[in-house]
Length: 299
Image (cartoon, rainbow, N blue to C red; front, top):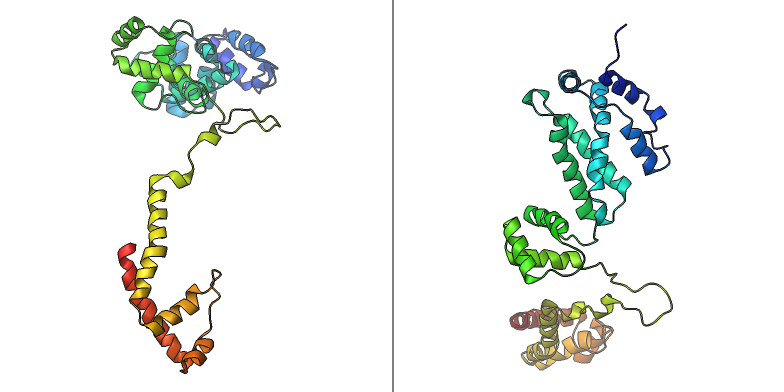
């Protein structure tokens, strides 16, 4: 009778994943880690065989075997990022995504073990998760900042601020400018603050949003308001002065008599000047066109 190999055991375990609890019914992270550590490891020959089956035939069972046999690697790597204060289970979950990406792209004929190839993908997913969730506001956006973020966290001792000598030494070690080290340390030492105060009855709660400048104080808004005020006062007065007395009377009676815009009607002005309502409309149209030209210099 042929002895079963660890790859057969892994595939069988994958097909019976519910029995191992990988559907999410393990109850806690410790039970998951214990189950993962009981999965058999692959020899190099078994790993190559499964990887070729996946690459050449899209054998999902083979891919599953590769993933299951390396879950303990994800757990081990995730343990090194617990200092960021994020849930261990979430780190493992993100790392598992990276592991699956690595298995999908793994080439068994390159002479590299999957464990070495997968570490990059696992860490990349964990790094992305940490940077997105460690703070509400991102502390690192560029590739260089991301690298500095993780290196600084691992080199910095304690929570105290770094001395100038420590900054210089770390900048030399990481081959970056000391100003970049200082800036990243400042970002790391900061904390998130809610813009609005908690919803309770206490009046002395600090609320940063109360100290933010109003939109009305924004330079473009200020200039726009000043231009509008000038248009309404100086510009309008100048435009009215250029009209003849009758045209000016019609415009003022129609548009400037009341703040709510309810001015005299065409028929009321027609009776006042002894002409037709149509003639009043024509005079009004010419006057408004002339005023528009005068106001153009104030816009």
